[in-house]
Image 1: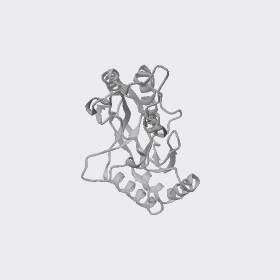
Image 2 (image 1 turned 90 degrees about the vertical axis):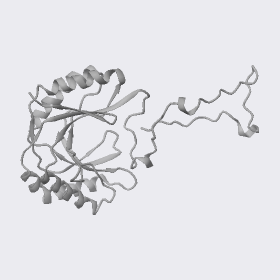
Image 3 (image 1 turned 90 degrees about the horizontal axis):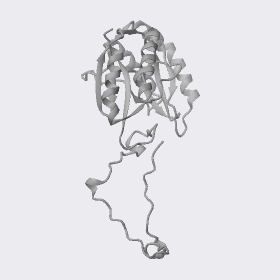
Image 4 (image 1 turned 60 degrees about the horizontal axis):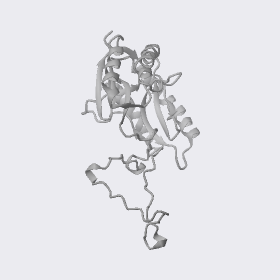
Length: 257
């Protein structure tokens, strides 16, 4: 949801620009604060964010946060994700990539371990510490993929083409349960989806204009005939780093149990 930041106009143009007067007489205009002292509001214009809108309203003093597991972006994974992405962009020109597509940049894919979170400044240090404590009691998690599917965000404004986790699901569930019952609950955040669908995303589309969800789901189902075998042949991937992203800062913790 977008926050409406428009201000009401205090002048009445139909009365020559004079301010409306109450019973007690003229109400003096309150001078506007100089720019350096005005609160800095985020740019919520969807046109500046590929058409995306906020899933939660902006709250002054709150920091957006997200907990996720790094998936090593090995060559075979990079190759198959690129092929899948190119396959869909022939038909869906507005599909936005969600995986690293520059082989020269050291980035990983990821699996979400939390919903989008909203933390206050005084919670940040303790939340990071609590996630680190959970992480050090878990061993690295070995995962694999086998097929493609479509998921939607909470307010159904975006559709995602994803590859769900097959092997490693139980280990991921135990890790998420401990995060939910620990730092997520202790900081009054909403727990992860139940049941969770652990996945790595390939790309997303806006569900606006002439978007047809059934058509996309059917196309993804057909694409499984082309890519399912290749996804299974990727084999096992070992994930050993849990990350907490707060605003633009990322804190990483090894799974070292």
